[in-house]
Image 1 (spheres, rainbow, N blue to C red):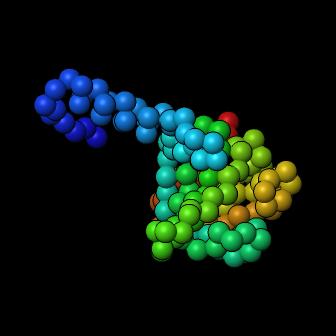
Image 2 (image 1 turned 120 degrees about the vertical axis):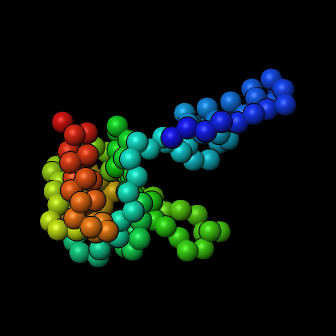
Length: 141
């Protein structure tokens, strides 16, 4: 994707460039703030209360986000004033993953926030579930 922005002067262009780079690379923020990673892949999923899903407060619609280091679930809140809830799994702690129909599942080890077990996520269709599986599998190798 590309876009073009025209500025009145070089100073304004430089300000925009710095702002865009800060968003892309993650900027240093004040103490207590959260650094937002640069996700390489993001999928809309529904976390089911089956197995590990019942041990978390993440049941329902979430975004499954992938970096080269971790898989992060971000709960989609209806109320925008409510802070986002996140659950992160290091790629090193994912034992295996797969897909069945519209479901993507991943088995995580005991040293994760939820403990050992399977997390079941439902995608919109089988192609998306398969894409999630194959993409994460590449990152696990």
